[in-house]
Image (cartoon, one colour):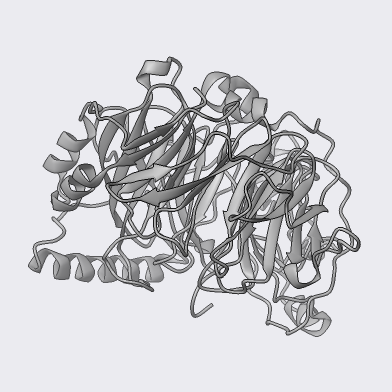
Length: 543
């Protein structure tokens, strides 16, 4: 079965290491220049996904598209290549023999399998519970999802959500922070006409219910509403405080880290009604001038590493391209104590990502372009790291600390490899990963564990794919043999990792992804051609 169209395999209790894929062939160490190309040299980023038509969510450069539009098409697609049809054979002047054995569809692997001139990948609406795409006025290198008060474990469509993003404009003064409110993210999965009719009836009933409550206006399709704050210079990374969603930190290309209070913007978005008139007005809003609550200019260089502590309210850590890390301690009056002279140094080159421990108050980890992961005691600035472990042979671009299984750490590198580490067996003398995946054919640009399943995580890569992984899955020979009894099932290559649950494509040069922690299974991405929100049919509760 092919990723993106396969049934979920049964869970097993054990996990065996996988055989390695061949390494990616692209140049390592160019990630920072590569990600800057997103906003300033898009021609290098590859083929753009072009929806033929869609429903606009307003003006002002923002546009939203839904996969349930009948002519929605993603050129880079997500499904299997099925070969020529009978009609195509007739057009070529050849005839299909009546007694010829049926040909199974083949799994198409991005970066490995080529395509003939007359072949194309198609978007398969049956493998997405929902898929929506939208664009802001400028590409965004980084974004974050805001925790809201709409409830936890929300499974019923349509969905609403809040997010914050920072732009990569062509001129420094055009950049801004964009707080978004998205509503009417409805179910788009279509298996057949009968199922589509049932979904339409379900959506209609849910919409009618919402209308009675005065929450959702009778409008078809998702809409997006925004509030903006001016930000001088491109935004390298942006994160919202987990306990105070209106408190937002930004790493700028100017080398300054700033913390913003966006309570007025969040309040205004929350008060808007989700109808076409409010959406149109919100789209055309101009960036407001607002002073940051705090700005730190003590880093030796610009950077990307930034993370809020999940255990200490408003505590922050930031790392720069010169290898330095600073910890921000919150103080009364909405300020922070951050000392320019108190620097955590353990990397020989740039610090690429940071993650606070989800359980230990004084512990955080960092990864760098030197291929090293460091584990730190936040109380000991100017001291050596508690642990310093070589984890990859190339730049470690991103990392994620599992918030459910606290002993698990994931790292993604420039060579396309994804590695899983058990911190109970994490030492410089014997650094053995629990699992290693080299499916990606480009640098891993983002990785994040889900919070509804301790064994599930997602990755984004410069190979234009976003992958969902389930580490609890093992290859089951008996089940695969039973599945092959159906002639329309594709045969999975032997070297295709069974833990690979889904491959999302059709986006250009994805930079960052996040799970929505209150909507199990919903994943958001930012790329050179805009944002996607999708939920795979085989991911989430009940799958």
